[in-house]
Image 1: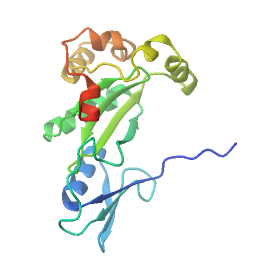
Image 2: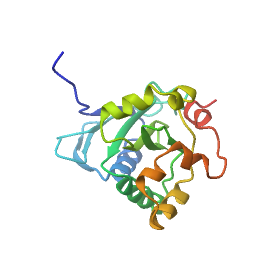
Image 3: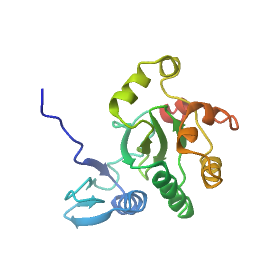
Image 4: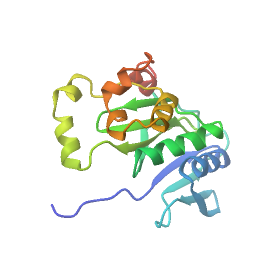
Length: 191
């Protein structure tokens, strides 16, 4: 197959469209392209919409948990670790903190929960090419723990400000050198 699909948009059904709109506009630095007739379309780049919100009638949409959500998460990538950490700081200043940061190995990821309880992964690739990431995933470290450890994002921000390299910070060894944190699988699965 030569044709490759690209992610175009994600649609959420929600009973709280304003809260979801505001959250996604803040987290993704998005803006509303259209809002009306129970639909809201948001974008953050040159695509006409990346997120769509379909309003559910009051009382129909039940609150979700990681165990009951149909979609586990949508992921959005940044071009650099510095951009990811900058967005983290902007969101933290707005009172939005990740539910769990995870050093997957092939990505450095921050998982947030939207107002409906869906996970949103903000990430940066740790390898220059997809082939390098795939090779890592075929290796023993990933095979031994396919999720990876959590890490202290504020510690990472401070280390980067103190001159730590991206190569150093985007490893599981660095993540494991910090304080012991909750198991990410418990947060991501609701177990």
